[in-house]
Image (cartoon, rainbow, N blue to C red; front, top):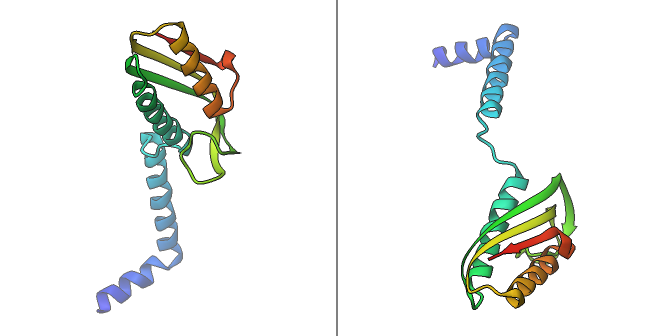
Length: 132
């Protein structure tokens, strides 16, 4: 028990606190440099891309889809868009969406998918590109 007491005294001494602060800062720098933490905007984009791919693929005439969502910035806005949340939720602003689809396609389907995406994310049709 006396060894633990001595260790605690050394830790809380001036030199021990400096060493502890340096170790915490070094650990933070290593984590930041490794890119180990994904931002909330990245998580939002990844989640929404997957959900939109599943939604588009579920339409008649579409055999598969790949989606890319571009975000305005890391900032958040209050939105009740496609986030599948309950009511208003904090989410990054969607700047544009591109969808590359496999299947029959056709002008009608391209228009329907474009309108759906524009409505879900509250963006203009000029910010949506759908390709078959």
